[in-house]
Image (tube, rainbow, N blue to C red; front, top):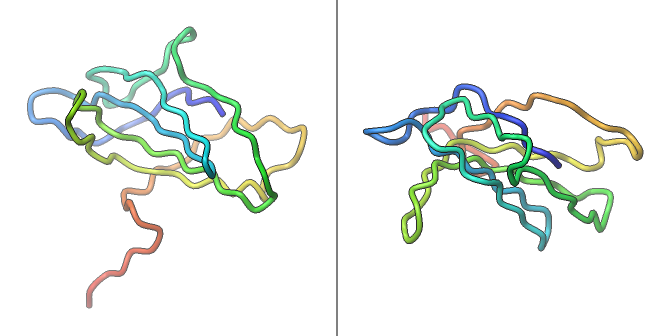
Length: 114
């Protein structure tokens, strides 16, 4: 999995643009990209830490990609959005180059009050 860019991230800091970082999680495996400072539409440079190989243990695994505004060590990062990729929808031996819309909710199901 390789993260190339994000487009139109929300501004989550008062004084600067988003310091974007992506976390990729599948089962017990996780990966973190480099932080791209002060960009609401960050692009990860060629030699940056932006991709990983994650072992898939079963066909119904899900890959979670979360985008956060990094606030540095010992501070909570603000949530910008997430994507869930169902491995069962992917074909072996294929390479995908896709744009995936971020969901703003941090939970799978969002209940809207009536």
